[in-house]
Amino acid sequence: MATSLIIAFVVFMAFFTTTSSYSVQISSRRSAIKSLITPALAPALAVLLQTPPALADSAAAPLSPKQLNLSPSSISSIVNSDVTSRQFLATADFTRSIYSESCTFTDEIDTYTLPKFIKGTKALFIPEGSAVTLTSPVTATDDLITFKFSEYLQFNIPFKPTVTLTGRVELKRDSDGLISSYQEFWDQSVPSVLKSAKF
Image (tube, rainbow, N blue to C red; front, top):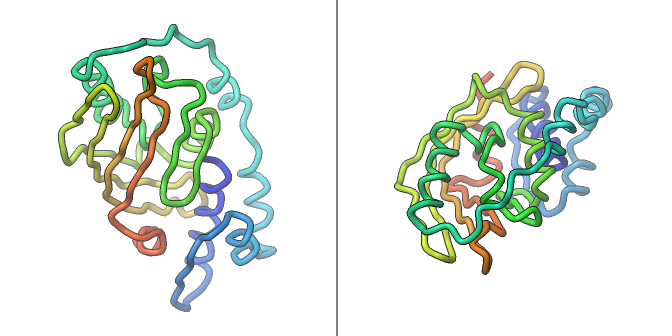
């Protein structure tokens, strides 16, 4: 998650430092970076690219045994708690034992590995200034878990911009019942989400 969240950081700062209208199609991380980075933003970007030791330690913490083949009701209850109590879309604090270590996390910008999702989310968002709300029940089968959400996210960057968005999440389960992929579907376009930034 870290690389594409850094792109979002650059986009936010570009919005803050220009008065012209802004629209962008992020077709690749490389082209987005080339089009948005300015010399003024480069130092801050370099700092953000560094992973603090505390975050590296948390991502490499000893793993609990995996909870295999949980019933739909059991796993939906865990996911519900992760979203509502632990706010994991903004904090990356989730029950790792129900996820495969090879799980991928996809949003409207890019796809991330599990460790990068944890490191990037924890580095970029301010939990106290963010909130995630369920707008539908968490439903689960042996193959799929889904829910809808509404959230506002405060970025841990200068001026602490906050964006709002709504959408849904699909969590696919593999043959042993673990979650093998996480995918967000936003109701808004990426430019619309970025334009919602409040400083």
